[in-house]
Length: 277
Length: 253
Image 1 (cartoon, chains in turn red, purple):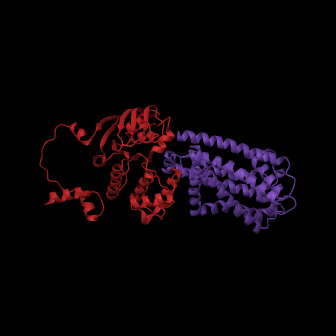
Image 2 (tube, helix red, strand yellow):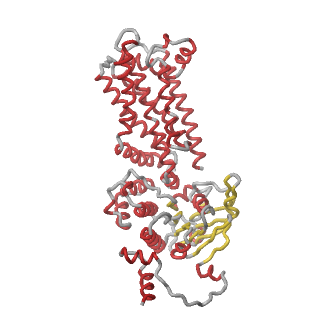
Image 3 (cartoon, one colour):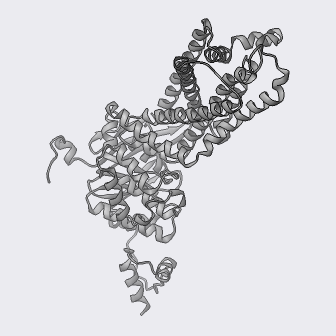
């Protein structure tokens, strides 16, 4: 592992995200009551919780948009409060609602963020990302004419500009159709494959199961469980063996009929075929 | 971070200017109301209004220019409000940029849009017979006062842009500003008004600004009015800027 000159050993070795004793209240409402978790470098960490559990609050605190009442948080080794500028250099945020400029074209949106990240050659960066996210044909169209899935992809593409080591995805697939979800999942998997740390929040259990290396369950202001999928499954009583005919899920059927190529669900489709035989 | 201020402001200014160039109706609608007032007052009421010698359109134009600015800045509040409501504001705030550049880009966009609207209104006034023998220096002085006035009102507009709960709330604040010129020397000399109204009219900012611009156009001595006008503009600018920045920093911290 090569260590950047400016990076202290602590920054290089420590977790990508560190959260300890995090508390936040909105007036009477005690949303976070002492949240602790670490996210290892290069992993995908899913924060699972129902609506209003405080997932977005955590993401907003980590991305320097909101001040915590108590606790310490660091991103990429930088303290979120005292080194906010370094934190902003180290991460990017894809919020719950696609944060794209409707009046600009897709390409202009990407170039704007590239300029704001003070990168040279904004045009080339934009073209690369458009190609990677299958948006080249729509590059010169106004974003207001994009579909929900295209907006999300553009939104995530905007987050990748400058290759920040940490990415926050707040409910990245909320409001997307099945195809859009699979597209986003594939993008997230590719990211982690390149060594980017991803913290994603979701209320969809299958999403956490599909994507995450570790899953933490946020409930009543605390993390009540934190582990790999296998570890979490061990929390339940031992599995009983039952024979159940596996029907393809509606999602399998939908995707098979629509016949979208380039979806990373090949393995699932093969499995569904197997049971049908 | 501050060494990026100019670059960040330029990038965000480019974005807002694209918004304007893609919906030029915002500039047209800004200019339409003042032009309508100008037509109404010159061709309908003007005959009955006595402002001394000279054409009424010459008397009227300075007040119309201020109304143009007052109606133009409501779009600044509107655009800022839309940024706040959409996710784009938070995206900007989570980027490693000079944070005040987000506001400055909106303010400079307002300045550009208002200058265009003002030029359109002056051109229409010329068609309606407005004439001035003012030299380059006087025109420059008029432009300077209008820029200062625009900046002051724009920073004022930033406040509802940041704090409004609805689109209507964001733009409604400009209505009183648009009607302030009616109780001033903009349309009729204040001498014709009853005591208390006249006292208000004589001492509110529009009158001194209008009188200064009118004197500059008419190549007359501007005198003490200029300093009162400048004091109002600068004072309003400083107060509005300080308030807007305080609210902004409270929002983003």
